[in-house]
Length: 175
Image (cartoon, rainbow, N blue to C red; front, side, top):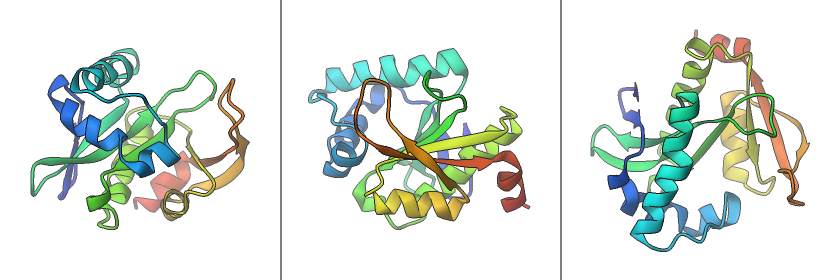
């Protein structure tokens, strides 16, 4: 588990199904991240098991549930993902709209980047976003990510923006 004064990041559990169902069915998630066909609590539990928990088991990291330390409630997901199509791990995040603009995504991302450098000893971290997702682009750039190139997931024609940040830039930002 990762912690800051305002947040704690933890592994998802089956009991997070209502939160996950709400998060991935919000319009911004569907527009910018993925339009899953998850409509029931049981489907959300299956998503948690097959997507989130499986990644923790295989890699020791994944997308973590971000909780507000003050409210002790889930506010979003943030973490590190290892995709077969990319050489390096990438940062991913998504938050409930009522928590946008409060610094949670930035703070959670900083924790994840520190973890990537200090614990995983990665030389760089990538991030993928829809170019029109201005909020994500702004967040990535404020974290120190630089645009690298256009990218498409294998078998998908959608053109995404691939960003990267080197370990040294992460370390420099945290000193």
